[in-house]
Image 1: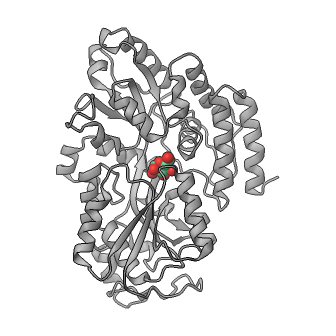
Image 2 (image 1 turned 135 degrees about the horizontal axis):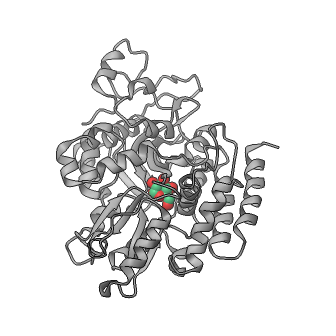
Image 3 (image 1 turned 30 degrees about the horizontal axis):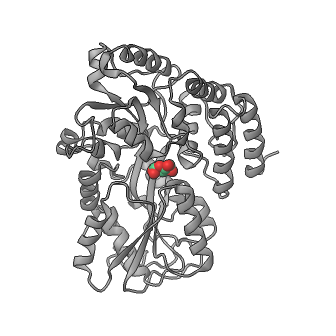
Amino acid sequence: MGHWLPRAGIAALTACALAACGTGTGGDDPAGKGEAALTGRGPITLATGKDNSGVLPKVIDRWNAAHPEERVRVVELSDSPDEQRQRMIQDAELKSGEFSVLNLDVVWTAEFAANRWVVPLPENRRDTGAFLEPTLEGASYRGQLYAAPWTSDGGLLYFRKDLLRKAGAKPPRTWAGMKKTCAAVRKLPEAKGMSCYAGQFEKYEGLTVNFAEMVASAGGSLVDGRGRPHADSPEALKGLRFFADGIRDGMIPQKAITFKEEQGRQAFQQGRLVFHRQWPYQWTLANADDGSSKVAGAFGVAPLPGLDGPGVSSLGGHNLAISSAAENKATAHDFIRFMTGERMQRENLLLSSNAPTRTALYDDRKLVDKYPYLPVLKKSILGAEPRPRVVRYGDATAAIQEAAYGALSGEVRPKKALAELQRKLQRINGSP
Ligand code: GLC
């Protein structure tokens, strides 16, 4: 079984300052937050968003075969993060204990921790050096770990390398370059009827991700280091305008405002897009040689473009946390350590191309041979911009989605949408 703590970390803890030390069962309220110890063994559940890669049954079977008395049952929720969050909050408020382990989107940590819907983990942050720092940040609230980083996510620019080559073009570094390259590609007979670009522009969490990237890639920041919003900055306006204009002038198909990850993936796999902003999970599925993808082997992956140079990704990813109402917390904790251990992360990467959270896997020669984009992805994650880290995340993301969708669908002028968003975010943030 993979250990969540690196060996050195475990050795350093032999004084057993943490009850989890050595046994994997404990938890003595390390943060002094009045949480119960991680006790209780038996069957548990894992509540998670839709398993688009189909990887979970394989991984869970592995655990269940080794732990017949402590089996895990997967409760698969919607493919929309907003709906997943609603369901998990509902369960937390009912204290039903139906969900033992929660697969939390990286942006929900503050909300779930502050409301005590999940318990603090006994692992000491200082002893988790094997993980990429932003993934630990995203799993912490006020310096305390509340979840274990399971998968990370960084936005990548998928491009049709076959068509770019034919057009004599390289992957673009700027938005304007992408537009120009696309115009050249579209002149090729084999690109007939293709659209240039799509991201996740439906009104849901993916739009918050994409909008935050537009702002950051234009040199702005939706929320600064102190949590203050800057949605009405000139950079935010330039970013949002480029994409709103793109929909108006046909660079982005009108239909893209109905795309979540999966609809965009289908469009890309069917050969309808030259460029697609997408997470790493698409790599494996779009390369499938079972006939489901028309672009297997014909695409590459590059950093996201930006206004004047390379763009900035939003930080995505998922962390495993233990529900406060869960009965078998000791089993839940062991299961989390199994899932986030190096062995299972490697397996997850090999099966699904989901981004690992452990640094070593990005530097592994064999893995880099198989997934040549890993260095690009690591850079994307290390340089990624977190979405607002606020307890009232649901309100913040709803306001962002409203503004971005209004502008992209052409209903509201970008400037007006951003001014309104700034007012709402200030209210949510409690600033004047
Ligand atoms: C991916 C990311 C997650 C993000 C979501 C948006 O699942 O990992 O952080 O919120 O996409 O759709």
